[in-house]
Length: 169
Length: 157
Image (cartoon, rainbow over all chains, first blue to last red; front, top):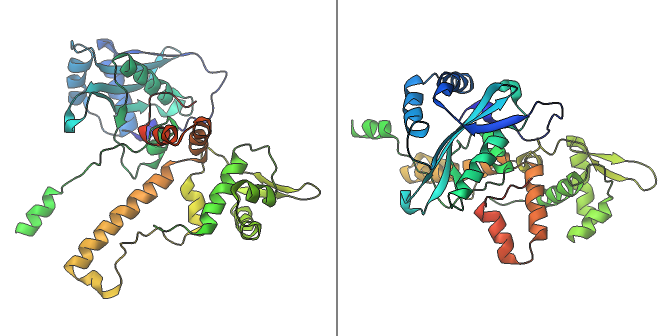
């Protein structure tokens, strides 16, 4: 997830124009690619082409690419889906992509996107939502915790393949 | 990780004051609420004032007020005032770090420390107070456990 997702939901500007959240359509492709490039500093057009094929044009009803529009401009996105039986887990929602342009930080855009995703997961009948955040990314960790998320029952483990190469050489 | 009494007292005090930034509380009131030593808490309060997290209000009916942003201050900010390091109990002493087992144990210690720090740095006072409000509304221990462990879908705001 990207640095610009990291607004802490502290204050809401009362003069802000209304924010709307909707499922993305094919015409949002370039704006999402640009937003993601802006917030993550890496442009990934191929990745987003695949995401749009699966999450926008695809038939699976439990996959969501949400966009946030503010004053006629798309200012954020959230990517999520219901996954079942990965690592033995019963169906649960996953939020695995979030980006909000720096211009609208602290306007609760990230919160609105994630809460809308929660609503969709709830309608899909799941009772828990998970995400992954780097433990060094304290702003994003704080953001998700401020929405009520806590440490989950799984521990993520990693193996460094380069280390294996070093020790065997 | 062992937390000193002063750290726990500081967390009680800061959170109690942050709950209502307009409120002005005396050391005795906070000590009574948490059944802790007034004398010890008084020392803690002085350190909290020096940190800028709270300020003292002089005169009759004086006390302390919260003076920071609860959406920005994390538990780590408070804990770090009183703990020199957050090293885990797995810290390996001296020359043993030079051994394979020593290094491997040190890595376990570093992992625990890293997780501890990430947890404390990601929980703001505002987030903890929202959990507290829900815990206070819960009637049973199992309700509280559910609130603190499940991360349910109901928005906290």
